Amino acid sequence: MAIEVYWGSGSPFAWRVLLALEHKRLPYTAHLLQFSKQEHKSPQMLQMNPRGRVPVLKDGEYVCFESLAILYYLDLKYPDPPLFGASPEEAGTIMRVICEYQAYIEPHLRTITRAVFHGGVDLRSEELTQAMHAVASEARTIEGRLSKSDWVVGERFSAVDMVIFPGIQLLKRALERPVARELAARFMPVEVNYPALGRWLTRIEALPGYERTYPPHWRTG
Ligand SMILES: N[C@@H](CCC(=O)N[C@@H](CS)C(=O)NCC(=O)O)C(=O)O
Image (cartoon, rainbow, N blue to C red):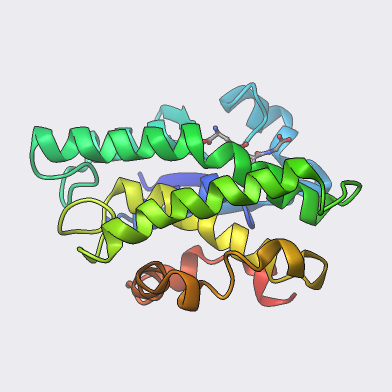
């Protein structure tokens, strides 16, 4: 029975799972839910994930939600190619950098992208400036890693790339908005301010199956 994945266009968390499924070349059926129609809160979805969020993965009778848990499950169930490295040490570093991303970057990314997309916040506020400062400085650390290797950890595309990539794409999309021009000055254009990071984005965009993971509504505006 094919794997089923329930996702929403533009969700960075769901994007991680699609990248993992494509990388492992697993057959899957993707159910694209419309946030605007609250399809992620339908009784069927709430039965699988009482939090009413995507992604949700169903593999036979087994249901998993929380993107990182899904990557972990997929890797144990379908180990080749691995998402969490080829040794315990590499797995430890991959998980460490994921934890660092979640603790020190993701909350700031959320602050910035919410402010840009939902409005109602002064983009020149101290809070936004601080958030952008924190992201720019953490991105410098990732830039350092990527200037020594093609991938964030180790010699291959791994869970840490899958976790970070969609967040950076969402940030770029927010910072491309004219309203965010001032806020973006420190970060954009990525290829100029963070050349290794820019090359890494292009590298992932060239991976087989990438196009199937791309948020459909981003193509239209
Ligand atoms: N920690 C969760 C976050 C999932 C999440 O927040 N998904 C968002 C889309 S980006 C969602 O479904 N939001 C719908 C809602 O909160 O109503 C994960 O990693 O899967």
